[in-house]
Length: 448
Image (tube, rainbow, N blue to C red):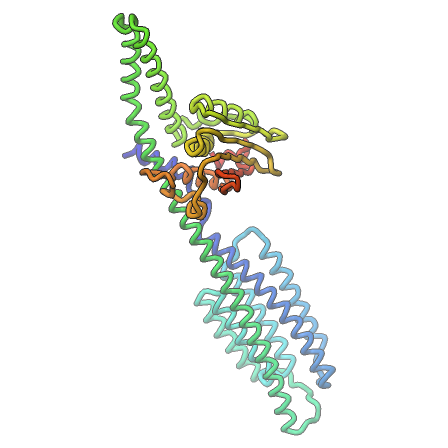
């Protein structure tokens, strides 16, 4: 059991996803903070327009200087919030709570300077409570409710009364109703705008989490297959070694040495046996054993020249066109897992199109691009839609589709992409694109 557990840990370290729900939640918090910043800019513009209209349009004597200072503080808070949203550190619920508390504080200060609870814009507290209910955890949302209620009570007791123009009672009531109407329109518009955007952020987060869960399930599937493969490789080691000894003994026996045909067949069997042992060694290296031996420092051009030459020698395709157009060359570190991934793509193309295939490598900025083209029957639309899903294959045999599934997941682990398409003139092409940083000596520390 200890050997099995060790293999499991090695495979899991190589293939586990570099994500967590916490990271996705932090991204949602930062998106919501940016949305809060946008609403705050609207609030600043709305307050400026309202203050100017009430002060100069209605002739109400307002304390312009203190109100301007509060607006400047709100602008400074917004600038700080923008910088915070772009930082790398996680954004917590407490920080969002403090952001909304500062919004409540500035609103309370403006209301204190403009009539307190008699100001029709006091219902803007409901906007703060709505934001808190969506953005914050339950305890902080209820705390915000309690604080805004307390501010309402205090503003009904302590405030600076407004010097309103001399209007009769009906005129004052009409002015108050107009203020309430504008406040209602403003609050309703901002609430709808915020809820639509916040809901979009939440849906995007849920979709991202669903993709990550699917990716995690696929990578754990690879771990299980890796355990099976490495276990089978261990079990096959002994009988292969026994067969190798027997064939060597047979080749030295006079009975066989006198028969040239038998000797030739024994030599062929030894060659095939050596290939089987190489495959078993490759499986063990890819699963983590002899790991240092499996990693090779090379260049992109040298890697693909050697890889295609080896594949051509072992598979003997009828017609293979190879164009190594990667320039300028770059140093990389490769191991057997990367080599096996590309072998899988070449094997699939050769099986589908044994008469002709083409392999092209090129450089696209800081990425390596490999395209394998064939003249087979191509992919079905269902296959194109589910490229890289396990057991999705048009070959109709048990285990079909695992090769491309492994290709997609290993390439994704290296921060690359795999795409497939059908060619208009017939056949299909599969393109692998890998960032050179993930193949470099520095990047190989985590990727290999």
